[in-house]
Length: 520
Image: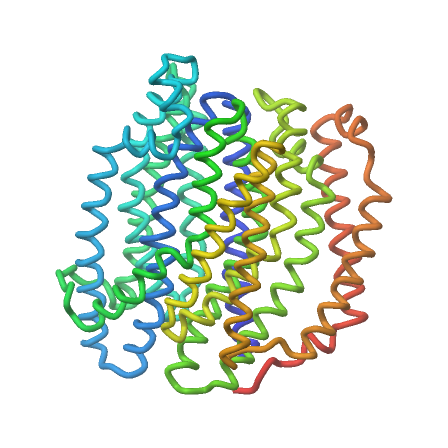
């Protein structure tokens, strides 16, 4: 079983890698087009709100509630009953999301005033930043319908994942990146306000992602006609699990919206600097953390349904070790190479060295929380697979309230960097409380083998950091180099650091990692 998890994880990681690379290319194109100025702030704002709701209705709370129930049906019910569940889930979810989407489009000025309060106040006082409020309200009308398409895309992906078809849903985000890149290259330059073109790229990307998965559903014979089923037992169960999970699984997204709210009161560029640093953080988080969580949730759900508690715990331990193996060196690499990576990826066009310096500080702050973010992705399924959504909600509320307190304490002395620090601190608290709950419930406890493995990983990472620091040129040297030389030296540092790390790991912990987590 552990080999199957590794194989599934590799499939998701490879597909996610393609998506993340295109995502970085997308951000490079956007940075070149708009830099970190007013237009960039407005576009990232208008894109963030539907993406936040996507985590609630699609990839986050809904998936965590839907996958365990669907797995239970597939293990204990007939194929006809499974198809009926899918039809009623699609119909019920469709009605809810359609209503939310229509409200979002109509009420875009209210949403902009709520989450961009600083811009709204400036608009009321007829200050220059008030133009951001008007632009964001218009763009939100274009980007909000993305929520409708991506919700059904995520529903389709969840169905395919429970059937072992991980590659399709992992590859799907590629089309969003392609659509935005195409809009940035061919549509935006033709418009007086290029950010409008990017908004239409988001809209088109949502449609393409939705259409892409339909043939795969047809092939699996799970393409059904949606039907209303609010009170159907399976839908009711998903609904009850989802409502508290709306908070529990999306705490990090709520924290990011709170960051956006406060950043709207800060200097121009704050939202963009946080966005660019967060995008680099999302690369390893999506490549490793989300990929691992995606493949273990269906497995954990099956182990719970079949009352295999020992295998459940072993699967959790496998996920923790996978996060340690990949997350710790990724965190260290982000911190050490923050400025070179930002220079290589974004420093061209409207994005200058000042933007690199500003974004690198928030990237370091976010990077310190990378391991915590990844652990949350693996620990939360330990609750959702057992259909326990109440405990993560309580923990999520604690983490979110703490983040608000951290924001207030840190934002004013440290500006946008304080917001990033607060997010990382609340993620650490969230992960710690999630593990504590599993530990006290006797569901999962870190094994001695995993603790020893962690110590060996830390030793290997320390050697990797020393190597990176020793061979890294000064920032002045990086700035003097051409783009070609920057790319070449950055790739050398990444390859050398990764090579040294995995060599040490193979020497110190190869046998530990290769040993199957459990039999079966």
